[in-house]
Image 1 (tube, rainbow, N blue to C red):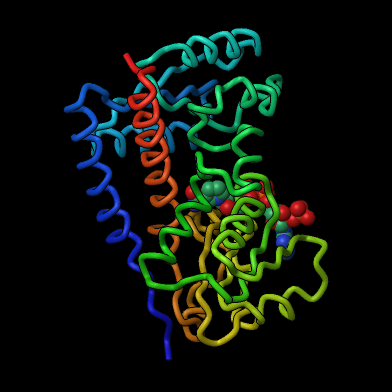
Image 2: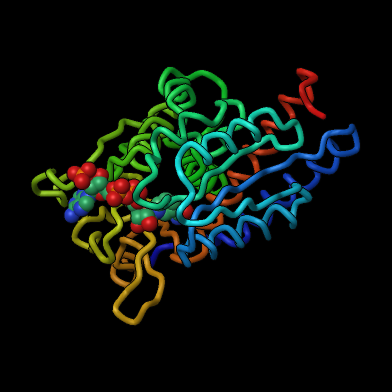
Length: 288
Ligand code: NDP
């Protein structure tokens, strides 16, 4: 039987509706959540992503500001700006859009964002908190995947989850969140031999590789939940995932479409993190 294609748009719509209501309530109590996105240079794809983030903020009532810097901005200037936003009570989330120009050390820049406003959850303190299971910021893409599982009623507890990809922004935190929810987790990567022998054991299979079609039907156990994080361009320039959608759809239990699920869920979790950060600031009296 063919898989159920997960209705990402509907999930995103319902979560954004909840966020909008909570933003309204918090704003009525005097704190309007604010997000600043810093973008350096003219990477065209980045400008598209940033526009999408701005639109999403407007949709739920989060105040957003895009701070554009020229491509030749030096690291010290960028760090100085981050420090200013760290102190600025109007903004509860700070995001530095990746990629940065080659002369800037991205890792060092991320470390300068105060962990309280690190809505991407890239700062080592937030990554550490995630690791030890402490309350706090959650990484947007993996948190979005967990929300999708929740919305379709699939509990990871006791399931075998296989994550393909071990990057710091997707694969590793994805594995941690699944582990937190009591899945038995296996992480695969480019040096994993016989990938299909492992992925075929997965009840929940998350593909975060960045290569179109790397997950074929032979990699998937019948009935598995297949979540496609990949965002690739095919030969015609069309956006596609890591999963061979048409083939895998025939055997999986659930499958996410690309585009239309994990991408917009990631932005939704960014909104959620900004709201949570604003709420914490409001509770501790550090807002404007
Ligand atoms: P990275 O390039 O940082 O990581 C890719 C991972 O895939 C690496 O761990 C790599 O292994 C592994 N890998 C590469 N080739 C293979 C293979 N043939 N078999 C098994 N594993 C392999 O990418 P990201 O994690 O940043 O992103 C992954 C994908 O997700 C990309 O398409 C990206 O665009 C997308 N993405 C989507 C987001 C969204 O909002 N929807 C957000 C973030 C990312 P190794 O470590 O050994 O090199």
